[in-house]
Image (cartoon, rainbow, N blue to C red; front, side):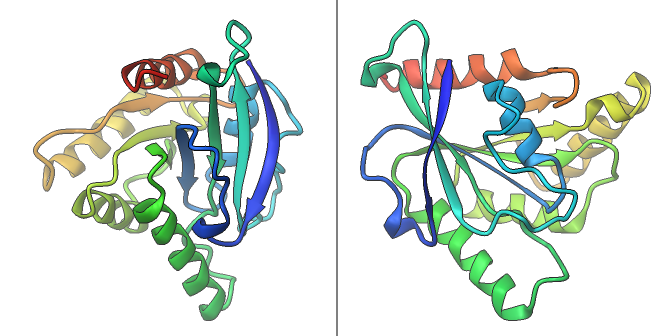
Length: 205
């Protein structure tokens, strides 16, 4: 597959009108979103990475094309959304980002699934749980993607994910699809792309 930058948009109304299926990635600031996108697309320079959180401030669209099918049927958009919860931004900017994210999630008809990135090293964070709850209440389809799996031991990783699942089951009857990834080792790449491919197939794409 190949991926190329298309456009950065300040609002959902400025996003591409192509009608291609979209898969958006979002997470708390500094969760490793840009690194994960670059790993998925095997392009270290595709999404801009930074040690400073809060770098992504626009809706960034990338066009992904299958090597096996370069027609429109083999294409989809990968969307890099701004991170949430970056405390150092001003109140007005945080509110603008919240509105931008919510408008995209609720209004973008092409959105097939939202991938919510979670730092696998941490215990469940209120800001993530609140966002996941909001997605559920608004019937936005999503999956959970645990990042930085290489930063913790295998046993600790399994334990952290189990705790997260149990926390979700306190309020959810059914868990969303869950993936475990590492941008350093490539873990989870095939699983994520296969999942997207299956969703595209189900759409008749």
